[in-house]
Image (cartoon, rainbow, N blue to C red; front, top):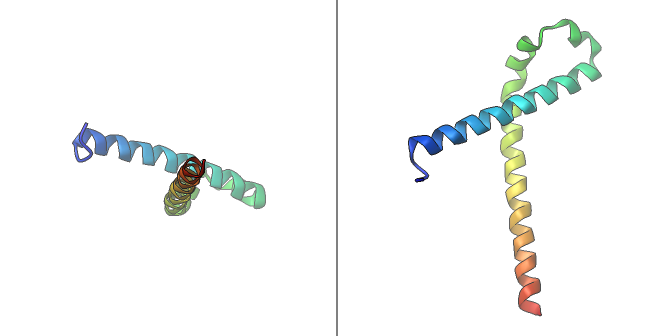
Length: 83
């Protein structure tokens, strides 16, 4: 499967959208715990406000995950070379 193929792009965008929806749901749950009056507002209205934040949070978390993975691999390589 090529990285530029339409299938790969569709899978990537659907996966990102699913993660964004899940993060938005978690953010809404947290907001409603902090501000109980938000329970009176429909979740679909809150999602419109929270969605851009969820998207940037996903990007930030994925960058952190990549940084941790690279650091871990570098540490393993250094340990392997030392022995």
